[in-house]
Image 1 (cartoon, one colour):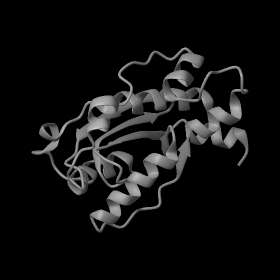
Image 2 (spheres, rainbow, N blue to C red):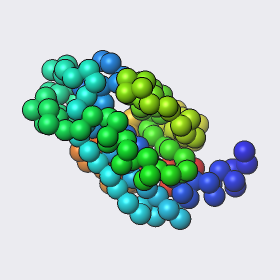
Image 3 (tube, helix red, strand yellow):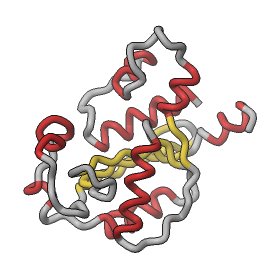
Image 4 (spheres, rainbow, N blue to C red):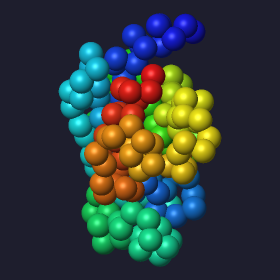
Length: 175
């Protein structure tokens, strides 16, 4: 695909980020999505999710995302949350920072809920950053580092809503 076609395609997309409760990819406990239309953030969605399986690795809660069982015990499961996300996405491509993680988790949750995965077009700002920013110019290709490199304000790392918005802002610059 030519760079020009890719750029036009990336004026409209949905950035997505998930957090997991434990080492099982299906254990999504939070999901954030940000819709970009004509290069502008048009809408946002965030939800806590009751994870499957429903147990928390203490390290994930305490050191990574700060989400605990009491935060999600009364929340809807992935299937119901995705019912609200699916029309939000429509036929737009998805973008994630480290698509390998987010796509693996979403696919695993689809399997856990016996849902048919729609085979979304999925782009990765992490991969694109590695192609675009020369080694040695940036300390790492983490979401905070890439935001810092491009001068994109960013805080609250590992909050799915904040990470999805940061990813959307990176995608607007990098694709």
